[in-house]
Image (cartoon, rainbow, N blue to C red; front, side, top):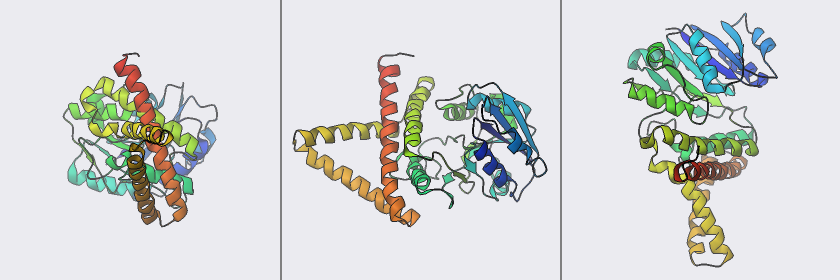
Length: 322
């Protein structure tokens, strides 16, 4: 089995350096790497060239069109039996491809995804963000686990599709705003089998600050409405949870300002919710500091996603604006 690893890149030379270094340590080496520089100003040409003796790596430069179309550019040039997509801010465990290869021989999936985790070298903020994005108490809890709700939709930071899928379904038709979910739905609709490989994790850095994290999650909330516009049946009750959180927060603030009895109830539930997050994050990361930061990250995750969701729900669904 031969893999083509496709990595879109935009102004992040340091990230691709760390990612390529992790790929040199793979225990299964039947793969090529295609780095697609998507109109970057700060390119990684020299960094990628440094790995030419250790990896079968190819470097391409194209005008900026977004990550979805950059991946399509890689698909068109890939030689593998499976195309694996990574985000540039991922580190890949040395047994990743070995795990995927063995799983695919046994289960014969047409497309797959895997979970993400925090690496020991991550900063405390990055570990807190990773917790928020994988916690059972946030929307992260429905992603990348064996008990996911409904159909499993691989996410593009850790996603693989067979050559047969690409030849029949094609590539991404959206370049951003939920492009990976839209692609997964089309793969399902064409009768292909998609599955989670639980052990095929990657270490996903995501964002290095809470400000960047807020911006990213606000974008994710808007992306969910974009998916709804293409596939209305894919909007589930669970996707409204962050919006309910935002509304509940508004009720909490108003109740406390005007001393309404409802404020006591809201205070109790919000306090209980964040206490649960604190102790669970403490148990997971064995650090009080990361537990405190995880409460902040979880708040940002729900608040930013919820605001983005509400914004585009009213704009694109209620008022039917483009």
